[in-house]
Amino acid sequence: MTNVERSVPKTLKLMDPSVQFRRSKAQCLGKADLSRRGSVDEDVKEIVQLLNSRDQFFTTSSCSGRILLIDGDSSGFEVQKQNCCWLLVTHKPCIKDDVMVALKKAGGDAILKFEPFILHVQCRQLQDAQLLHSVAIDSGFRNSGITVGKRGKTMLAVRSTHGLEVPLTHKGKLMVTEEYIDFLLNLANQKMEENKKRIERLYNCLQHALEMETTTKSQPKIRERNNLLSTHKKGRNPETVGDRCIAGQNDSKPEEDDDDPGFSVSLFPEEY
Amino acid sequence: MTNVERSVPKTLKLMDPSVQFRRSKAQCLGKADLSRRGSVDEDVKEIVQLLNSRDQFFTTSSCSGRILLIDGDSSGFEVQKQNCCWLLVTHKPCIKDDVMVALKKAGGDAILKFEPFILHVQCRQLQDAQLLHSVAIDSGFRNSGITVGKRGKTMLAVRSTHGLEVPLTHKGKLMVTEEYIDFLLNLANQKMEENKKRIERLYNCLQHALEMETTTKSQPKIRERNNLLSTHKKGRNPETVGDRCIAGQNDSKPEEDDDDPGFSVSLFPEEY
Image (cartoon, rainbow over all chains, first blue to last red; front, side, top):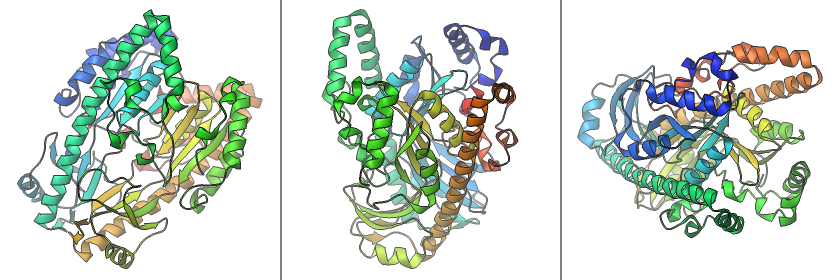
């Protein structure tokens, strides 16, 4: 789905924020999808639909995760996806032969990348973004973060730490063996699988959190109990999040955040 | 520098937020540095000092960027930095021989990574985090994001999109040639150089933004003019940020964000 922010009329800036949010949502979801694919990826449809069915959210862009082979120039600097040739892109597991065929077209520095799930969500209020951020962290998307614009536009980017970036050719010349590419694709496919599990986890956590939110809003006593729970919550015990939201062992330790500069950094919103 | 949140007394939770922030800052900066290195990396000292000299910020963790060789198990899943052996870590450019020597100790799946600059900053208020976030985006750190905790604790994570993650051995067996490792290290060293430039750019942008903020606070007319400027600012023209903050061409286009799922997504705070 595409971000249509630039086409939102200036007059909206003078409106009541919630009215402005509703209009921006209607306008964004009403627009044609301008992405290369032209539609939301299959694996994220459920999450996108769940978010867009709620008044406080709408999604502005998403990618379920993909294996990408790009042919960049040989300057050695960061490849710009727009200026380079896409030799191969797939949202499904990939076999060596596909890559070998695609590599025949490489004239520069081809790089194989695994890019994990990414989702951008516009949120009505900061507290909506906080809820979503907490759910994203619980689900293992530890590089997620909120953006708040000068005029209060609030976005959440759901980002994973789960990547792979491997140069394969230099000036068109293959630098690695076929055996290595085979090994590499096994890793990339495993990351794709793990990525899919995280997306499912995110969906379950989100569904659960939104249900909890609805319940607690209508039942103050439960809200108090949950506040008490979250105050005592340490180390992100999944049980306190509910059995429909089981964070994998690999995701329950802040030490494993790829942000981690070699020591423990707690980035869990609810511990703040 | 280390995050000492877990040792902040419960009583602080009842305090006035700005008093609590001052106390947390004093406590955090007063603590021993528990990082592997035991001190702030040379290349980020200036930024860390600049931020900590301001009432509205303190840094909780940082890494200037590094080339890392880790030996993980051969399960193929995401390597956990804590459970694996660090064969090599350097914050300076690296040569092939260093890696070849370190690889002799690899018994599992060794991975060479370039990890760019990362910085976590606790901010007194959301608007302080917004300013810092805007500066980070301007400087090319496009995966930066804000975290706001349930009790209002506001953090900014400055993150780059600028990485490299390349498996080199499988079950101790080298999967690539020495020539490839040489080529790879050239890339990693170039990324290290680019990373350093971005850190310098961040420092200049930050210094400039903090000066602007101080000036505008004391001179309302300038504030009006700047608001007008920022309203008209499109496409992050560096000139409007000032000549001490020149965003490189590669960093001035939202299309080049690694979040980009194949189309333009504007994530620039000031355009919101």
